[in-house]
Amino acid sequence: MSRFITVRRTVTIGIMGGLVSASIGAVQADEIVRIGHVAPLTGPNAHLGKDTENGARLAVEEINAKGLVIGGQKVTLVLDAQDDASDPRQGTQVAQKLVDDKVVAVVGHMNSGTSIPASKIYSDAGIVQVSPSATNPSYTQQGFKTTYRVVATDAQQGPALANYAVKTLKAKTVAIVDDSTAYGQGLATEFEKQARANGLTVLSHDATTDKAVDFRSILTKIKGENPDIIMYGGMDATGGPFAKQARQLAIRARVMGGDGLCADSLAQLAGDAVGNVVCSIAGMPLAKMPNGPAFEKRYEERFNQRVQLNAPFAYDAVYIVVEAMKRAGSTRPADILAAMPKTDFTGVLGETQFDARGDLRQGAISLYDYKNGKQTLLDVVKM
Image 1 (tube, helix red, strand yellow):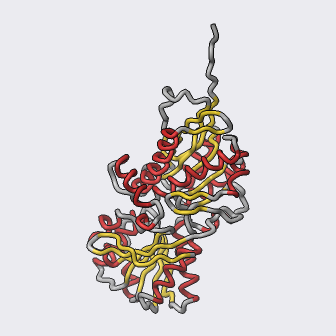
Image 2 (cartoon, rainbow, N blue to C red; image 1 turned 180 degrees about the horizontal axis):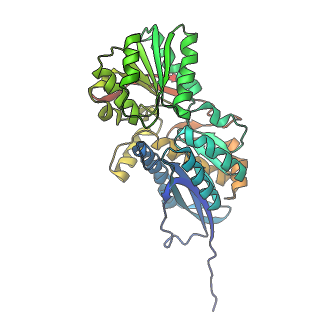
Image 3 (tube, rainbow, N blue to C red; image 1 turned 90 degrees about the horizontal axis):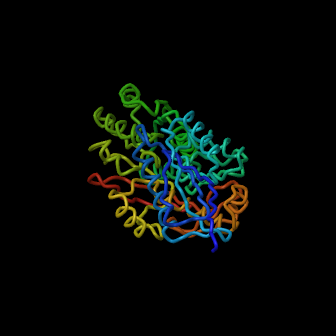
């Protein structure tokens, strides 16, 4: 009589928001591999964080359902989802937790303000970090070999907004406000550089916070300046009320913002004022992504809700990590890291390749406004 013993080895991949376990009993996998994901699952950005986590979760579930073999071993993925609440301190704490859990890669963080401080921890541990949404240029400019992203940067997004302001909106003057986060400041700074280069007169640049609810003091000052446009660097949770209060003060200026502002939820947060907003997303619109409509259908069937913003980016990020495992024939973090520079993956977003810093070789910026409360595509700028 012979006896067969299955030996299982646990490897972890982190995702911020709480540990998500996968059922492995029926699969009888030789190896459990954890992929980490980090995003805000509490606080004002939780709706966007959950959307990002859902995208990663859908990829993990699909890969497990198809069956995954790495280096001759059957593998089951587990999504280790953690919550950073968009807070840099909590972000670094969770990053260290994922390292201690021995994750093999991390999809995250969602915000630049948490991605940047966490990146040092992942770099020291030699763990690949693929952000689905961090757009601040400095994220990949630190010299770390572990940092990657699947979106365009604010060095592209800011100028795209500034160019649209001048060429299409025919703006001559602008007032700038940012939310004092790495994301908001970075986007506003890149916008301001290009605005000045385009001949726009920058009347003021004020700072608020990502937790502010009352913007009337700043907006009253801006009303006196009478700008053609207001550039807001921040997320929809504050940008929506900002636009609403600007309308209540009868400010005529259009409000512009980046991908943090440009979510479906903005219509609810800004009310009727959403019709005065022009915003950008660091990527192609979902409907124009090569596999976007099919992804959207699967996402809605699985989660019974619409895609908010970053779900397709997190989805592809998981597949990119898994493709690196396949090329390496290994789930060891060092081997995954060594395989990442050769990424050439075609997924929902289209073809993804990285440059030496970990940025996209080809990027796109989509510009939108809102008509009858619905997000409407204005233009796509290839970078």
